[in-house]
Image 1 (tube, rainbow, N blue to C red):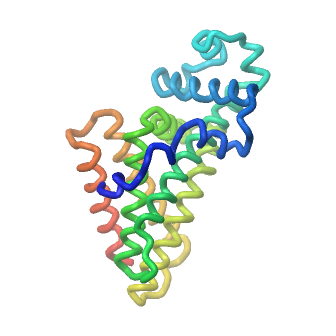
Image 2: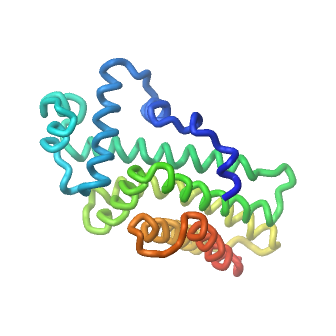
Length: 230
């Protein structure tokens, strides 16, 4: 992932990203809110989403339950804030990586490079923000049987899918083929997203004997194979 060398840590400072994701100035009260969100992400990534409660969070931060509930009336509101922050972080990184490969001479290879950049960005996110990535992947799992989490998942997945669909349409056009039906494009975009998520999840769980770079490269190869019939 050579592109990673072009990215500086200052661009993705966690406190700045939280401020931008919430569109707020970090006053004293908002800094407390940020501390709660950050600690919630840490606990959920270690203990699990279901096992993290306002009680355990209050004990960990050493503040009262009422203090937490002043900002977050219940865990669903808190989890949604965490997902908003995590999603913004992931999307900010993705946009940066895509900009690094964008070329004025738009062609087939450039579109494939943009897909590669999406994969590079997510694996960079997983490697450098493992707690946030774990939350995103846990939410992806729980959404299969919890309606509230399913809605949250739909919000962040739709943003990524739209970007992938636009790239797939451009690839199809460059190959001088008529656009696939929108249903087919949506299905292919979902397949690409699922592949990225599942491979990242295997990596986080140490279920494969591959480095981040090896798994990232493997994922890009598989995605290019999926795009061969466009």
